[in-house]
Image 1 (spheres, rainbow, N blue to C red):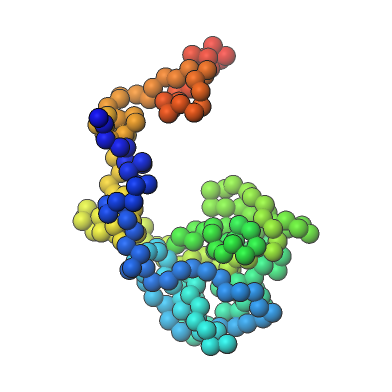
Image 2 (image 1 turned 90 degrees about the horizontal axis):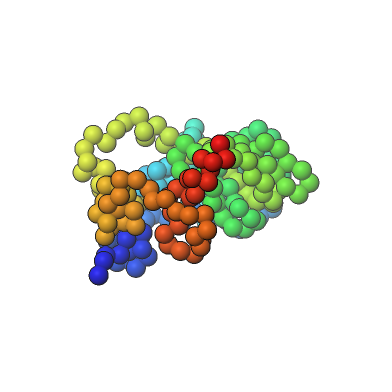
Length: 231
């Protein structure tokens, strides 16, 4: 009997792959849609589950709201919701000027921030029509979203974290463990055959084009002889 591959073992929910959610500070969500509301940044903190810092915002109605802090914000600044397009403000895409840097983008109206949440990652609002808006993601891919989707203006702070290396493997291990990230990651061909579907092979397997897509072995080079003939 073989062992489960790492990818399948994660789905089992064992202690090795369980997220330490009791250490997480807050959920990153947008408040319900108001007509216009303002909030004041009372503090900026670091949390273990995110690469970007969190801004604690005190709203006019007395509620406390947590948002990923944009680069350039400071304690005492005012953030608006559904009002002026200023740094850190949360607006619908239809109310954001073209060419603006945005982050925390909703994939559909009311979904909450889903895209560009890591430190230093941002998208650019290319343009918009009556119903759809075009957004260029950090990868360069252009997608279209509903203009009623909300987003924050600016880019998440903390993008300079890559400038300082970890230097020690132990620090990298605990940083990944705090966010439930598997580390170190080893190349599949360096693993034993029982630890990975491709383990113990020096090359990716060659698979016929007629192999069913449902077969777990349809990985690697798909029909290499076929494409060589076409060239």
